[in-house]
Length: 522
Image (cartoon, rainbow, N blue to C red; front, top):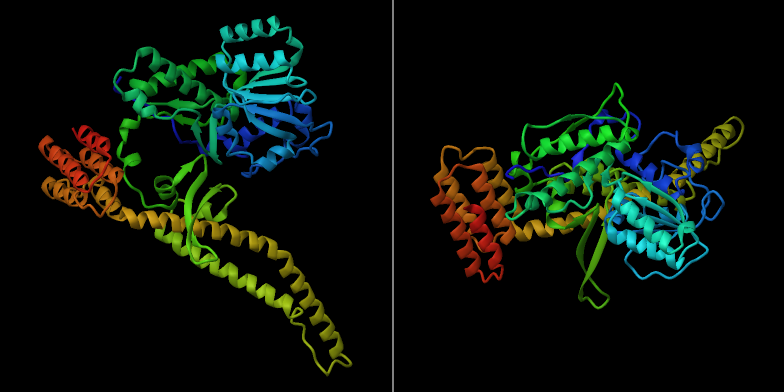
């Protein structure tokens, strides 16, 4: 099949919901699941105005009480990736979760606590759950499948439970339809759909594998539709994978009428083929968020990088940093994730300086006793004025002190971004990323449309320069050159060969990457 639909990172229409975001709706469903699917425990706060923050959809009773009992959460890796961007460890604990464990890990019996399972409906997971029930590891189990459980698997699971005489262990079983990852307020990625482009365009993929993959995409989108609670208007180009997924999704919506409802304000779902624009995901970028994703380890909103510092003896030491970025609760990241990287650096410096100045001003006020005015002429009518001035000064001081914690939190966030910006800058400088970005942008925008010879020479100069970029940077440049121009095959071969020779002369051990460059170019 030549056509491909890549499902990753799809934004929802702003008209899909006037009051709730997709992220908050998914979070509501997770809260309900952790409340053992008892709506009476969450209905009192269900109609509160939604917020992009991860903890505002429901107000839980104190953990350990009858309305928020202690429990164990057991999930598989795909479902862990769904929960991780939504709830921190402390937020899970506030929902009564004492332990959260992978389903295939070694687990000790805790017979007086219920277990909440949140897993994919696979034969392997069902077998483990049935074994847990047979061993009576927990007081009871509440089973939640991230998507639909096939009837054949349900029957197999039922037989296992009956054979082990553990039917009384199963307190509830639900298909949650939550098979997507909410990264931001209205940005999601389909769960467990990595390498989709390679799978759907690679050689040797059977029709059965392709059909199963398209079914998984359709069920993932059904989860989005069901969570939003409204039937979308589906649009796609004719032919290929997008139309196949659209038809599958339309049939699933008709077969599951309870997952959504038709309203006058219907969201728009557009399914496109990734082959319509291959340059964008391959070319280098210049914005803050894109560079974080490109140059650092970035997955499910968590960024990881190394920081060098000096120890007490003046020796360099390297520390690993892991930071969770959330544009919905981080004002600086929300404002600057799409701005050019130099602007983000400048804004971070300016805002950090302003916050530091305000902090110093507050601390100087508190150290100086509030700066109250003193006068030896405080007699008669003037004493009233002095009394009012002292009251105003005390009020200003109290307000300043009250604002200090929020100011320090803002400063902490800015300092976190300072370290991230520095880590990105180190990679940008080491690999000369701006040169690749500028040349790729010129190629993509058609600046070399009438002069392929000049385009080829520019690309040759950069890929042959052993001091600039790494294997991946140069491979991406060659691919952009192939996609953005109609250069003859001889030019493409010359560029790919030159890059391979340069890498070999540089002493690169990435011969496979060089070979891939030639293959991709051809």
